[in-house]
Image 1 (cartoon, rainbow, N blue to C red):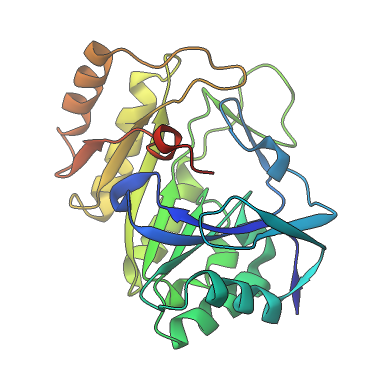
Image 2: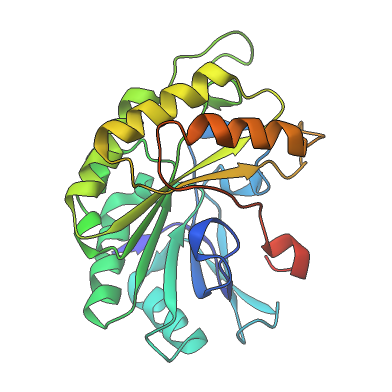
Length: 258
């Protein structure tokens, strides 16, 4: 079995409730969403080549052609982090667009005692079945229609919201052995009604599920982050429904990590 990958490298988790945790990232190619702030648009399409870090944290890579044999992925992760306590993040792009490969790798890593973190847009409900029982952590983005389009959507005008599939996805994760948290990127365009709906949907599953509000890092079409006053107000509204709401920006940019 093989997978289309962008890169494999070791760094530190830069987003969400596990920030700072040593992690090997396996980044899958291809994504079916178009986020205006996306800092890795090169992952939207499946690539011809994959780069693999030569030495942990060095930023020096060797390049191999896609698709990559899964045995080679396992070997690369082990070389970058011989200690199986170092987590592996299956990320993208959107990894669940390659469900069978993700499921195979997650099972193999979990069997060796390595914590498996799945980072996903939380829409591929069916593909989740192939991986969820092997995950220690599922970090699920909850996308807002004010800021995010599907690759099949027109370039302008309103788009259908994502709430129903996100709720179904999160419910399945919450039934599994994995722990989960939800991340919402907030911008100046984020609407109150959208966030209220997110919080209501999460609270129906479990009010204790952590919600991470991530102020957008200006990139691409997005030029400004929300101000602190807005973030305070947003947090207060979310805390009306949820018990664990945090503001956590991207941290890896501050130390120059990938």
